[in-house]
Amino acid sequence: MTDEKPHDDSQQIRSGPKPLGLHVSSAMQNWAAAAAAFPLFHLGGLQIHPDLKRAADDLLKDMAPYDLEKLQIIIMQKAQARLAGTLAGITRYQQHPFQRRVTPAALFDKIGTTEIRDYGPAVKKDAPIALVVPSLVNPAYILDLAEDHSFMRRLAARNIHPYLLDWTNPGTEEKAFGLEDYILHRLIPAIRNLQQRHHTKKINLIGYCMGGNLSLAAAQILQSEDIIESLTLIATPWDFHAGQPAHMSNLLDYFLKTILSDQKAPTIPMDILQLFFFSLDPTLSDRKFRKFREISGPKSEDMRHFIAIEDWANDGAPLAMRVAHDCLFKWYQKNQTQNNGWQVGDHVIDPGKLILPGHIITPKADRIVPAASAMALQEKLPHFTHSSEKGGHVTMIAGRKSSATLWDKIAYYLK
Image 1 (tube, one colour):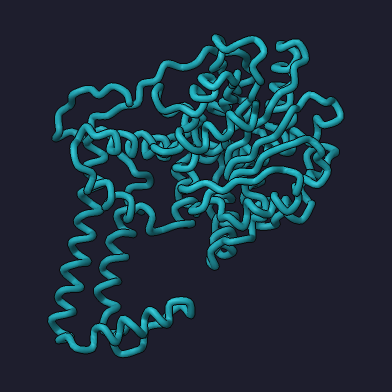
Image 2 (spheres, one colour; image 1 turned 90 degrees about the vertical axis):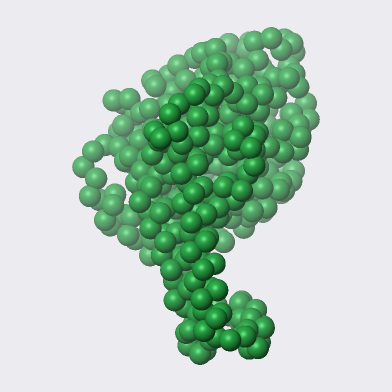
């Protein structure tokens, strides 16, 4: 996938996963609680989710013939082994010498600190033009993870002329931005510039994650100018109350009233944002690092691919405070998108107003954007085609198998 450089195995080269203390303490608490809960479960005093009641009853029946004291010891040993596996996986990740090295695509345009990279200088002149818009939260290079595993480079190989919009670190001006500013003063000018420099050829917009929300808003605002050819939305949330965990409301209140309000700086560090995403799936880290520990061969492609994605997940520029507030308050708490209350400039963003063609792609196992949240867009855009892909929020776009499924499907659609 890319180069590795030798290093002293005794020296850790990574401090992640971030925040490290939270990941470790969560795993310790989960497995200690699993062992401690057994007596209460056996006595029928453990509160069980209604959906798991039948499975719990079956488990109690299966345990009935066994000596309870011996069973308690076995559970404790298993819990300790799983915790040890998680910690070993984290250590293995921290100490692995793999480093991503990818030659950046040529810089096509720059507006403020926002860059537009050209991935198709060698494609045919009549190739469709595509501008790919990632999330503001994590780095854009998830779409160009490696030179031999890159969504952007695959589009170019399929004779699509792709450009990647990279938000980069917010500068002095961007630190005061909200979502509206990024749409009106960065994304829309980038689309107009790209279209003009290609002699008024229409642009295919592709938005990933919240980049899809921003792209949809831009497409609606620009619709009267007739410069957008199509809109592709990948793992894009819309109904922010659909499919969310029961604790989401309290989690949002906590972040808005304490963490965000306590921040005096104009930006919020990525480590703070990681707390929010961790809370959406608190056992993910434990599961994936135990699985990572089992990958055989220190130079295997599976191992290096895992590290490349994990490094990306722990990377990222600080986010403008107003952007963080807009996302958490306007989207997650007030659900303004679904309720037709999200306004950008003079426009209330309503997918039903879009008449251009498009494609909605939803992942089947997404904890960040639940299927119900993304499918809300399909209900508002019935003329868009829809497809569902295997994988989670990140693996659907950057997983080992995405090159043979999703990438070529998008390239085919754009043609």
